[in-house]
Image 1 (spheres, one colour):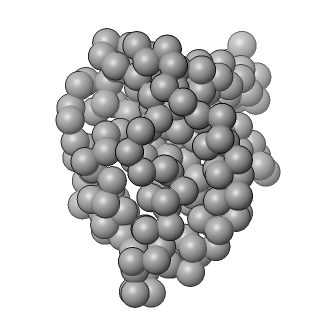
Image 2 (image 1 turned 120 degrees about the vertical axis):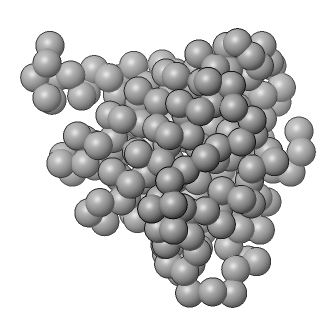
Length: 192
């Protein structure tokens, strides 16, 4: 395992001396570490109090969807439209979100270790990324319900942590939680 997720998040907020940081800048920081951290950042933004800001879950869902589709297709680094990469978030809000998430992430990191690593490698990685793309799309209609975005965001966070640390148990748990997301969307929207 390379650097821990909590250390990566610390670097992200501590190295910034600007008032706002763009999605493109965040992505460029994590590009060389694969898609796991790239899924984690928007998932955390949607999961934490920043996700209650109108439009944020939709923005995160679209960003996650685009990243997941590319990972499912086997791309090594993501491409996002300029409109998304130029979207900015306040570094203060990002720092607040990271500070709130850090204690929980540090507790989770104690449980992480490489196991069932075949889930974090192709072709399973690509299949799971496609599954994550569906969960990311579910965030868009769930924005209308208070706190409903927390389920897909949490599921994607767990999956991203598992992918980043090559922990198949976390990937599996995240995937099961994504089933709950699909159930929530279908019952809420009335498709079933």
